[in-house]
Length: 441
Image (cartoon, rainbow, N blue to C red; front, side):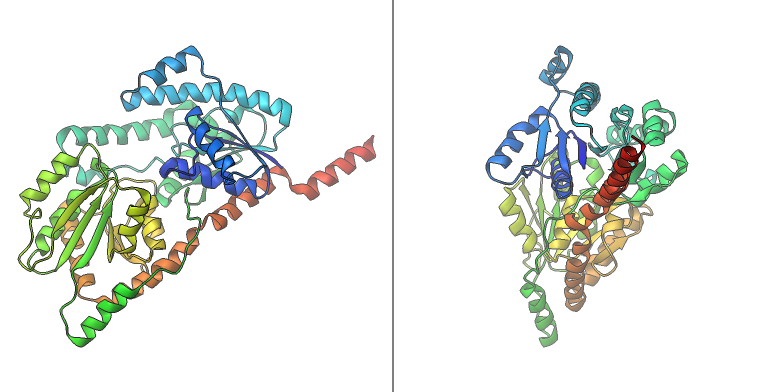
């Protein structure tokens, strides 16, 4: 097979969309001569990966030559809307390149990989070959009942985003055309699945857009130590809680801060926070207002903002945590949730969108999306319960490893590669068609 991947971001050295592009590329290369059109910002990373032997030799990468319009846009990065216009223009240039490559290579199919949002399906559904779209996300919205916890400007932005989603799904012609022309549409989470089936009026498959390259058995010594201390009637060590993510309103760290403020006199804990972003000052002030910026009476350090850490240090933080809290109220998935499961760290998250799909009852605790007041109380109750039940923490750690293995890239790739074979007709069908054509001749 010859497969064309449209992956605006792709790198083995970064997470998020870059990791999605890289994972999909490696999986496609297992079964096909793989050609990828990506942004020129990824070229250095892919060339480095080839030099280090990370990039299979049957992978060929390209980028459209930027015209003056794209050069001007890229030279003046600004608001998201402006960058999105640049990305849309890149898709037009990528279609021209895809047509030229198809004339030379005769691809069996084209796969729109990322950026993982329904708003930008690209244009390669016009190539006249099977077009696969997804896993695609982006239709999930910030829960309306939680908008009051945001600063007014941010609440307005989230509300407008929800309205834009509704209109784009139903009225944006390219979205509707891509959904109609796609041989298959794959949704990245169950919320997206519901939305796309409802609006597009067609069958949609479900598959997480990201994955894990490997899952080893983690060290559970700290969990077993808590169990032994509890059995002896000794005081339990402070519960080591980790939060990691971009400091953006949708990540909703204050939910966790307010829940922990309720537990200061009941539970010994530490909270270590990884990441940075525009909400840093506001969230730091919130922590101080809640009295979480100082040592609490029983001697445990309430919290610490660690900023963005190098990958190895972030991994060390994860592998030493007793509990990972993912408070996001709007996310397609969340790579960091998979990383926690792979590290054998129990997860507490909201029971919706991608996190609700990834975390099972055997690997974590899922909080219902009700109202801010109820949610904060439920978060506090979940943490209180887990802090006092070391045996359950250990069981959830063991369950996390089992759950993580369901999201290995190889398993994900097997699903998509089977679709590739189906769309390409498979070697047996191609051979039969060639023989039939020869017989006619």
